[in-house]
Structure formats: structure tokens, C-alpha cells
Image (cartoon, rainbow, N blue to C red; front, side):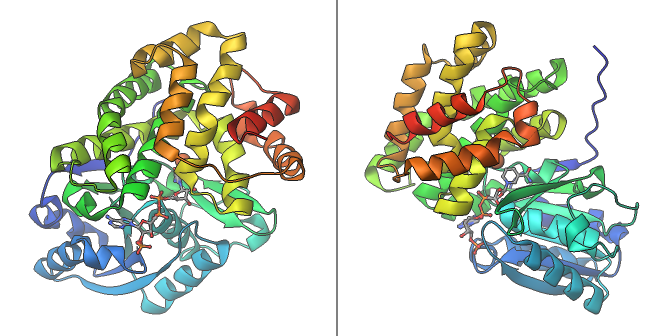
Length: 374
Ligand code: NAP
Ligand code: FE
């Protein structure tokens, strides 16, 4: 099999790594646009550290702190206009997947006039602002992917802008910013990362390189599941130590490196409607679907299912479903009308064509029904 592994992101890890490596920022220009969500970056120390690093290198900055969760296309255009107005030379994204994804689109749109109808078409020139990513959740792996996932009201779903131009130049991974994450965001983001690693193994584009990264990521994530369960049951994240957070941060980046090569599959395709129409968090949506989809895969391909179960250290798909049910508690309610709509959205996505076991619309319908007890 011919493979072509491309991962241009420099990864710097460790407590205090941004300030300690501030010199790396010097090459990108005189003014940075910092992109964040509303408040978390200012509260968890990451924004403070970025300002310290920029000041020590004599780099000016401006701040765009209006990125919402599941960022919209409008937000990307708004931030790009701000970057142009401020004449920013590069972008520093701090936050979960939402600010990082929004910043990727802003970095592209700040340099190219792309009509909204063409935004996801993939036809871009080479010009883009360099991007630095500082993840403060361990979930999306966006710091190591070429994807920007945006809420696309035109198609009533989430759409992925994908181009190697938006791979971050540098990813700074400092787990100390994650100590302030709530139980639910910790659980949801961890399961998003797990889903990326698993879906990488279920992709037609899986190869020995992505598989190695995926198996390692799954093993690292699974070690923290008992702690996540403890946190969920006590409502307290104290049991999540710095070391555990750091393991999850690296594991989620590895899973990002996986999907950067393989793309995601049916679970993400199905999850997007749950987020768009039902406001179910992205990672939670994936987690509620993952086991039920794997049960479908197992009917047709036991070998890959066994590989995934072995990597997880779980004996059966049914036990995985029980583990997810315990982590996620009460489920949202869906109607058959919801499910029919969501199936029609999922079946036409590229993610479905990316599956080694391609589900039919009926399979997808069954997965939704079983996952939500409809
Ligand atoms: P998020 O939407 O970025 O953040 C969720 C919440 O967590 C926000 O309220 C945020 O607050 C808060 N938060 C972030 N870091 C925190 C911290 N260290 N301490 C306390 N609170 C913190 O969530 P996410 O799950 O990381 O990202 C989800 C998005 O990524 C979705 O749009 C999804 O589709 C996308 N995604 C992208 C890829 C990819 O490859 N690009 C892959 C999978 C998913 P603030 O708003 O105040 O910051
Ligand atoms: Fe995801």
C-alpha cells in the first residue's frame, strides 16, 4: 500500500512551554491576533502566558475573544475581517476545538477573498496567515489537523473546511490550563478523542502509521476512564491529576494526527445532526453513538472490532456501551421524525464513504434508535 504521511506541526509540550519557547514566535511577524472563546483562556492562565511570551519577544497583539462553541461561518468571516483591519501577521488560537477551528478559517479568510458558497469547496490559493494552536481541552486534536469544523446554516449541519494550509505551525501543549475543566467538558472531550482514534481504525484510509498512533492513543485514553467515572459520580474533578491531564492532552493530539490522515467516519457523520439540531455536545454525541455503531461493524468485520476492543482492554462491544451509558447518564429524547432527518443528512456525507464497513441508511437508523432508546 502506498502511503503519504504529512504532519507539518511542530509539537512542544510541558508545563510553562509557551514562555520557555517564546523565541519560536519571533519568526512569524510583528503582530499576532489572539483568538479565544469568551472567558476560559483568561481564567486558566493560557492567555496570560501568551501575553508574557509575546511581550518578551517584542511582538504586538490584538484580541478576538468572541468565538462561541460550535463556531459559525459568520464568526470565521468576522474574525478574518478583524485580522485584516488590525493587520495581524499571524494567529494564535487558544482554547478548545471551537476557537482553534474558527482561527484556522480566519487565517485563511484573512488572506483570501472566498465567497461563502465556496468556503468548503477546497479550492484555495497558497496564501494564509501562520497559525499557532494552544489546546486547552483534550479532545478535538485540532492542533494537529488540517480541518476547521464550522456550523453551516446553509446546509443545516456542521461542515469541514479541509486544507493542509491550515495545519498549525506550532502546537503548544501545557496541561496546566486544563486543571479548570469541568467534569462534563472533561468527559465529553476525552470521548471525542477516543472516537477519533477508533474511527481512524475504521477508515478506508487507515494505514500502519495511523494505526500505530491510534492504538497508542486508545491505550492512553482508556487508562483514565476509571478516573472519569469517579469524577462523574462525585461531580468533582480533583481526581484528575496534572499527569492524567497531560496524558489525555498528548493522547488527543495523537488522535488528531490519526484523523489528519484518515478522516472521521460514520460516528462523526451521525453526531453532527445531534449537535446541530439537538444541541448535544460534540464529544457526548460521538460517545452515545460509538458502541452502537461498533456493534454494526462487528456484524461484518470482526477482525477490526477485535483490534479496537483489544486496544481498549474491553471484552465486548456490549461492555463498551455500558461504559458509555455510565459516563453519560440520562440521554436526550429523539423522535422517529428526528431520526429520519438525521439519517438523510448522515448518509450523504463523505464520512460514510470513508468507512471500511459502509453502513446503509437502515443501519444508521438502527444505530440512532438503539443509542437513544427510541
Ligand atoms: P469548545 O467548544 O472549544 O469548548 C467548550 C467549552 O469549554 C467552552 O465553554 C469553553 O469556554 C470551555 N473551555 C475550554 N477550555 C477550557 C479550560 N481549560 N478550562 C475551562 N473551560 C474551558 O469544545 P471542544 O470540545 O474542545 O471543541 C468542540 C469543537 O471542535 C466542535 O465545533 C467540533 O466540531 C470541533 N472538532 C474539530 C475537530 C478538528 O479536527 N478540527 C475534530 C473534532 C471536533 P470559552 O468559550 O470561554 O473558551
Ligand atoms: Fe470530533
